[in-house]
Length: 120
Image 1 (tube, helix red, strand yellow):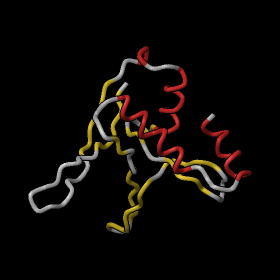
Image 2 (cartoon, helix red, strand yellow; image 1 turned 135 degrees about the horizontal axis):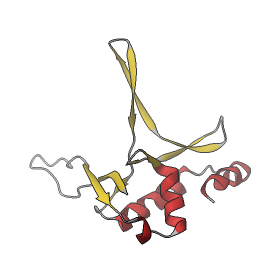
Image 3 (cartoon, rainbow, N blue to C red; image 1 turned 60 degrees about the vertical axis):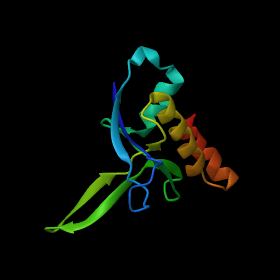
Image 4 (cartoon, rainbow, N blue to C red; image 1 turned 90 degrees about the vertical axis):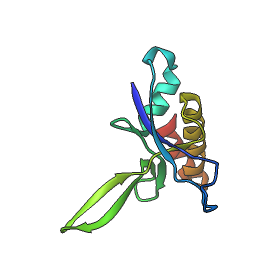
């Protein structure tokens, strides 16, 4: 299985600006993942891209995040908002996913309970 995500580069570029995230792809044997890890990854994956989740108050659920870019020749295009990990490893990817799920959950207890059903 292939997973594509971004890795944050902590070092600064020569101008003192943080370098942009690097797009990486890791290959993982399905047998190397637990069923729980497979389920968590499946909720974030679109093709091979591992996306961030956000809470949608209209549907009261967690949704995959996309960035819509403005009309280009009359058409809108959808771009994935990928998870950003600290290292190009499956362990770091799973840590970033867990952090994103914690950030994406709503504050209100009732809505949080509904959103947790998506995760659990």
